Each structure stands twice: as structure tokens, then as C-alpha cells.
View 1 (cartoon, one colour):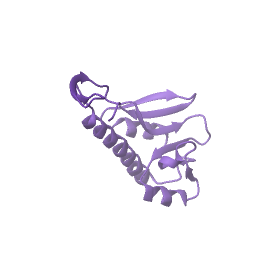
View 2 (cartoon, one colour):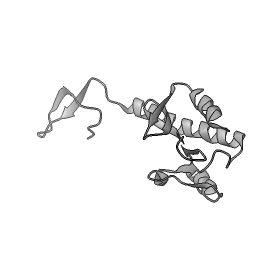
View 3 (cartoon, helix red, strand yellow):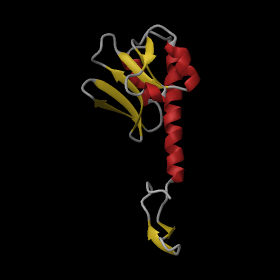
View 4 (tube, helix red, strand yellow):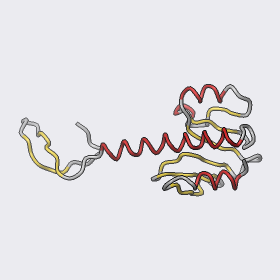
Length: 137
């Protein structure tokens, strides 16, 4: 795959957007969360994506694929060039990365607290008030 085909494939997913960040890195996002990055500054161009823990171990054993700097602990890999993998395998990995990121967003959306909730005060009495969704008890 080349830069244009990766770009076209990433943008074919529902709600996928692209954004140029960190200088020359093209980031593909869904709802503001990255699922693929494509470095345009490096020669050859490199690609970073999220994968399953099993696939992470398998991919890191191949030449030209390493744990992604800063995010490798979250099972992101860096393909040091776009031709390290075949087109079909790369498309499959991009699809899986999109799916993993999108599924986490859907889970968070389901768990958000909206409107008024019953909150117990210090004395154990209930009161109706709005609580920010990030504040958990």
C-alpha cells in the first residue's frame, strides 16, 4: 500500500476523520480518538496502529515492525515502512484497529451519566443533583 491507498482506506470507515498533527504525522481518528497514524516525514513512510495483545507479540517478531514509541505498552505497533506487510494483511490490521478504538468509544458512551442522579451526601441522605460523568463513586 502507498500513502494514498492507506488514506483512502482509513477514511472509508464510518465517522473517520484525518488530522495533521505533530508536524508531518497524518492521524486518522474516530470521535477524536486515533486509530492509525501515518508519518509523512520519515523515508520510507511509517504507520502506527493498535492491535490485539496476541497480534502485538506476533507482529513485533517480524523485521521492520517494533512496539510504537510512547504507546507500545498499549499494544500499538510501528511499521517502519508501508511494504513490511501485504496489502490485505495491512487492511485487516487497520480494520481491527478501527474496531478496537470504536468499540471503546461506544462503551464509554453507554456508561455516561446524564442529567440528575441520586447522590448520597456525607450523612448518608440522598439528594438530587447533577454530577459530572467523570466523577465516580
